[in-house]
Each structure stands twice: as structure tokens, then as C-alpha cells.
Image (cartoon, rainbow, N blue to C red; front, side, top):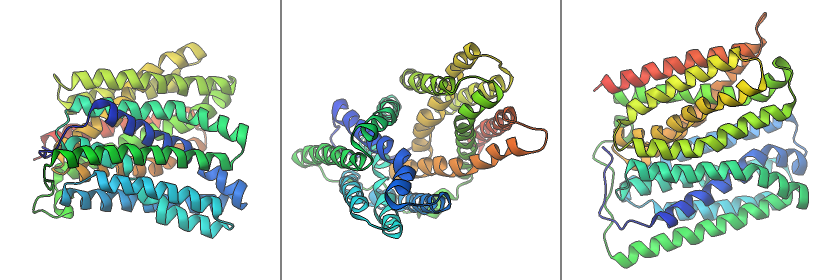
Amino acid sequence: MASTAPAPRQGGLLIGSGALLWGLQFAFLNPTIGLLLVVLYDATPGQVGWSLMAYNVSGFLSTLVVPVRADRRGDYLRPMLWCGVLTVALVTALAAATTLPMAVVALVALGGPAGVGIGLLFAHQRHVGASDREVMRTRAMFSFAWVAGPPLAAFIVGFAGNRAILATVALVALLTIGTTTVMIRQRTRAGLPLQPAASGERMLEVVARPQILVLVAAFVLLQSANFAAVSITTLYVTAHLGLDPLWGGAALGTAAALEIPALLLLGRLTERVRGSRLVMGAAVAGLGYNVAMALLTGPVALLAVQLLNAAFVAGVAGVGLTLFQRVVPRPGLASGLFMNTTRIGAILSGALIAVAGLPGLGYPSVFVASALVTAAGGGLVVLAVRVR
């Protein structure tokens, strides 16, 4: 069980505002980084790929190092404040950079650590005693930002130009810094000491536990199946179903919109049903979704099966986070491990997408492969529950 500390509980509005602002930062910046590298620094496709890989490696390492240090102090708010400061420094550096190497250095040195902020927020919430339902509600706010953020970012770029998105991210980061400062002041006024969340075990000793290793492997598989299915949807809709690309956007938009009520519903269910069982149910929904996508032939069915997709994503992204927080005995390390299963899953999804290029196969084969991987991930969740 994740430890709790005698710290003041911030109100839901303050925590929710923080999740919304961190979500907007990600939703504004991450989808546009590749575009900015091309437009501002004349990067080639190959250079964009290497630059994003370096950025993601920095994020991977930061997501382990920063939360673990926070666990030792029992303080997640001050590191989260610095993540906001680093975001402002990042967009300032990108705006001032004149060459691609300068921009890449900024992404690696500033962007990777800055991206840890949302994980620290979830860790702080668990550390001060939040329930699974409360964490899921916060995760729903983060998802809402991802629904609203990309279209809004596209509008800003179209109306005011590419550099305007950097100024927008800086503004959102300043608001995040303000929200975090209020949280810190509330804690200071309460006058309660910080309680470290880290036990005597080292990080590697915790991670090396068989149950945690199996759980990490399970979520890497589940996340890779999710990323592959999302990435291939529009191509599948146009090249295989012969529909307008708008149907691909409609399908993804429907799934994203349904994800928010699904997170809230699953949050209520965590009070009566074990998180591991909810994740297993989500894996079943994901299996059904991928099989249905491989077999469907029309737009109506395409939109209808997005209900299964939303249940799958909400179960993996929401209940999965709370499951890690219960199994891993440190809130920061738990959030860091979970976030990195997302990063690794995104990388491995490329292998699933590559299946479509094999002789005699096409885009439906990606969903078949994703169904098999989802089944394997669900099986590993079952195994993780039984391993001690």
C-alpha cells in the first residue's frame, strides 16, 4: 500500500485545476514539437526523429529520478513548482534558439524534467491520503485537457502563427506555478512536518520485486496495444474502409470524449471492486475493441465500438495508475513507473504497426496483433495479482 502522510488535503478544485493546467501544457506542446522543429529550425524527418528520441529518453530518466527524490523528502509540491519553472525556461529557450542543436539541448535539459510535473501531482495526492476515486477524478481532468487542448492549439497556430503556441504554453505554465504556490502556502500555514514516503529499500530493490516486474510488463503491453490502435485508426479508415478522413477524427474524438465519463464511473467502482479486476475488465474491453475494428465495415459500427475503446483506455490509464500506487510502496516511484510504461508502450507500438507492411497483410492485421498483445497484457495482470 502507498504510504500516507499527515499533510493537509488540498480541495478538489485546487487539485483539479492543477491537473487541467498540466494537461494543457502537454496537449499544447507535445503534439506540436515536431512541427516546431521543422518550421523554426528546418529539421529533416530524420532529425525530428532523433530529436524526439533524445527528448523522450530525458523524460524517461527524469520520471524515475525526480519522483524518487521527492519520495525521500515526502515533498512533491516544490519539485512540481520547479517543473513549472522549467517549462517556462524551455519555451523561452525554444523561442530564442537559432539552430536545431540548441533546440535539442533545451528539450533534453529542460523539457524532460519539466514533463514530470503531472506525475508529481498524482504522487502528492496519494501521499496526503486521497482515495482511488479522487485520483481517478483528477485523472479525468487531465484527460479533459487532452480532449480540448490539441484543437485549441491548432486554432492558436492557425490564427497567430507557430511561435504563438510557445507563448501560450508559457502562460499556462505560469498559471501552474501559481496554483502550486497556493498549495505550498496551504501546507506551510498548516504547520505540519513532511513525512518521507521512501522506506529503507532502494529503488532497484522495490522495482525488482516479481509482482512489480510482472505488473510493469503487463502495462507496457496494454499501452503498446492502445498506442498502435490509436495511431493506425485514420489510415485504417481511409485506406481499408474507404471512408473520408473525417471519420477517423470522429472515431478518435468520440473515444476521447467517452473516456472522461468512463474514468469517473470507474472511479466510483473502485470503492466496491478491486482495481486489478477493473483492469482485467478493461483488457477484455480492449480485446473486444480490437477484434471489432478488424472486422467492421461501416462508419456506424466504427463509432459504436469506441465505447469499448473508451472503457479500455480509462481502465488502463486511470485504474492502472491507482493500482500502481497501491502495489508500489512509494507514491512518486509508483507514478514514475506507471508513466514510463506509457513511454515504453509508445515505442513498442511501432512494431505492432509494422505488421501491416508484411506481405499479404494490411491495416486490419494491426488490430489483430493489438488484440493478441492486449490479451497477453491482461493475462500478466492476473499473474501479477497472484505473485507475492
